[in-house]
Image (tube, rainbow, N blue to C red; front, side, top):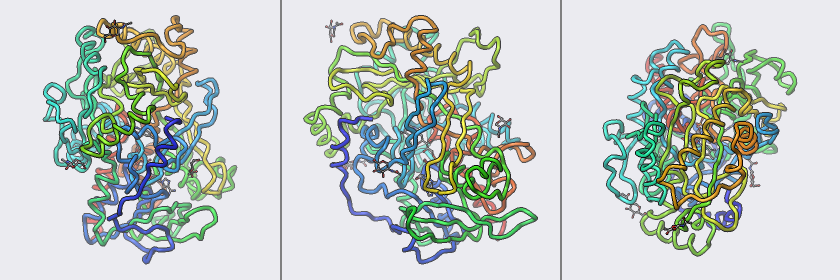
Length: 600
Ligand SMILES: Cc1cc2nc3c(=O)[nH]c(=O)nc-3n(C[C@H](O)[C@H](O)[C@H](O)COP(=O)(O)OP(=O)(O)OC[C@H]3O[C@@H](n4cnc5c(N)ncnc54)[C@H](O)[C@@H]3O)c2cc1C
Ligand SMILES: *[C@@H]1O[C@H](CO)[C@@H](O)[C@H](O)[C@H]1NC(C)=O
Ligand SMILES: *[C@@H]1O[C@H](CO)[C@@H](O)[C@H](O)[C@H]1NC(C)=O
Ligand SMILES: *[C@@H]1O[C@H](CO)[C@@H](O)[C@H](O)[C@H]1NC(C)=O
Ligand SMILES: *[C@@H]1O[C@H](CO)[C@@H](O)[C@H](O)[C@H]1NC(C)=O
């Protein structure tokens, strides 16, 4: 994103002594059989490996394609998250197919490739979704345990609320009873104030009917505009590697192997007439030797919304025709694998501001960067210890919106949103790097209740060939309507008196786009993704005619395989996705442990 800074960032990677016991490649592994093998050490995989290995009787191997997170300083520094992707050595470097809804642009689609997965490179906004989201998961799967109330026990295990690094008084910025202080991931309010925060909050008073204040949007009741939480503790990124894997590193029943990609799952027998898949082939790269590893109980796929469906397809589990086209023999025909991808489209909107106190200069000017780095190294405070967004908003279209004459409201329910606003004290635009001068504010919009559905499929039987990723963004009338209305809402927001003397003209044709047609053209030219793809191995009811996993996360039609990661969510939630994925991973681990107990 910040191209000008990239050489700096790479030069500042340095290695700290590593304490975790890790195998650097598959040939080092002493054992090849474990009770459970977890594929992928991202948001979900780290949780599963850490929770299963709490039981000393369970042996676990965690297989991760990428490197270790340890010692990479810019992974730890919150604001430097902007520099970690796309197209770096920590990224899978995916690109989408040309997107018809976005004037046929193909866009970069980053995914973290290191311990912690995307939680080691993401922007750390932390929330858990609306109560409607989980109640809808319960409804479509006919399994009440996925409902919001029941999932709260997993929220307790996941969140550890800590003070913001600047130790400011947080009265009025959160409701303590909605938070846990005993979980694994450090979560805090913004630790570095910015000049736009007070104006955002003032706008919620001035325009309170359209933009009401929300006193705590961590989960449940998310509607309105409020203070953002981040998975940051003491001015440092709290990824799944930091929060879950590091504390488990000393356990003798947990092995972790990095630089190791799972390339195929193999049939090891039959159970009640369905094929068992308890062997996984792994390799460092396309030319290195392949090793076979065996799970006596289960292989848990946590390779993420792209890695998991493609590994199923490489193993012969997927749509028969698609597999044949890729040169893979079908073992289990399931046309839902890789389908129904659901994602949040992102639309950056940027204005020049009358201020020099924005993050643009910190990330652009070597002297300012150096001073900020020194401050961060000293006590973790300052802009680098801060967060990309201090305030967020989750908003609905009005009930009278014309689209509802033809389209049924696709939101998860009345406590859920149609679009989001993120307020950012700098230029943010995945399409265009920042210019060499100027100070900016961005109101980034995200489409939260999309009706567009995308897909992912392999193009070859070679696991090192990139898959075809088609999020199919903004491909429906509802989606374009909602983004156009969201742009109009953002224009009304910044027209409040609270912004006078601060916001100047827009960049990129936003001011000039006045009519719905002109705004639509602006949307199609500028929309990207906020990287929240889910749904590609979706959970459905046991008796459903579609879907990839049952409500217990076991793969349909297959024995010995479970999926625990973002792919299983049938609808993208009212949240940045790490929080909801942490909750499903805690529950997934719980289900697996339950089965282990029952089988003893
Ligand atoms: C740039 C960016 C910014 C984001 N910002 C936010 C944010 O601010 N807040 C938020 O909540 N969410 C954010 N997200 C999304 C969030 O990080 C992801 O939704 C979440 O991490 C997904 O969890 P997961 O466990 O499904 O997959 P991941 O976290 O992506 O983990 C998958 C892991 O599996 C590994 N893997 C894949 N294939 C294989 C294989 N074949 N063999 C072995 N290992 C494999 C990968 O290397 C990776 O470590 C962002 C994502 C990105 C990319
Ligand atoms: C992604 O691109 C970077 C920079 O070109 C490169 O170093 C890295 O190896 C690439 N990663 C993958 C998985 O292709
Ligand atoms: C996609 O999901 C819908 C339910 O939301 C379902 O009806 C449909 O069959 C699914 N499609 C596939 C290919 O799984
Ligand atoms: C925060 O980090 C600083 C710098 O490493 C350290 O000195 C301090 O003890 C840490 N504080 C907490 C509460 O962990
Ligand atoms: C810029 O802000 C200063 C106060 O910080 C104010 O005096 C000045 O009028 C503003 N300029 C414009 C063009 O609004």
